[in-house]
Length: 104
Ligand code: SF4
Ligand code: F3S
Image 1 (cartoon, rainbow, N blue to C red):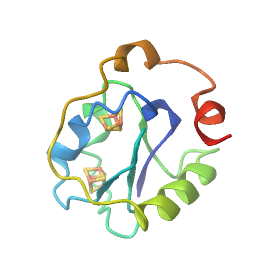
Image 2: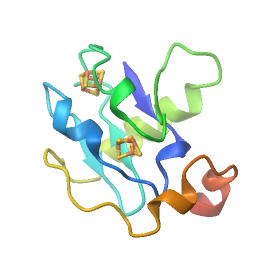
Image 3: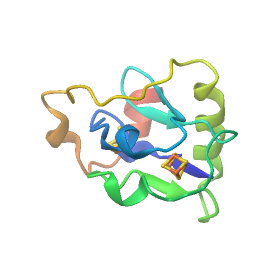
Image 4: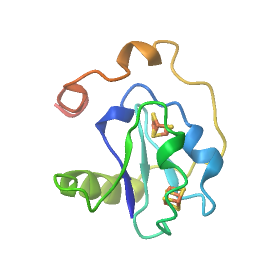
């Protein structure tokens, strides 16, 4: 499966949802997640994300993102169409420490 990582936080460009063939993205206030049970591992979304937030869960260190994607995809609503990104999305692109700011 692929997972959305903290690089998405507050960027939320949503290009990813437009290309997913199985519509397995879920929307939180500050980021999206993928439902790992629905993702068919096609990889199409990975290069579409301007924030490079989408990675395969097989990459080392991505266990915590897999857990986060699993947890929140069960709670958040499905999203299949791109909406407007936050006005300050570009300010957060590539910023470190977004996970701590968001989840603490
Ligand atoms: Fe959707 Fe494919 Fe991305 Fe999985 S890898 S979330 S199926 S576009
Ligand atoms: Fe987030 Fe990238 Fe999608 S910033 S909303 S994972 S296009």
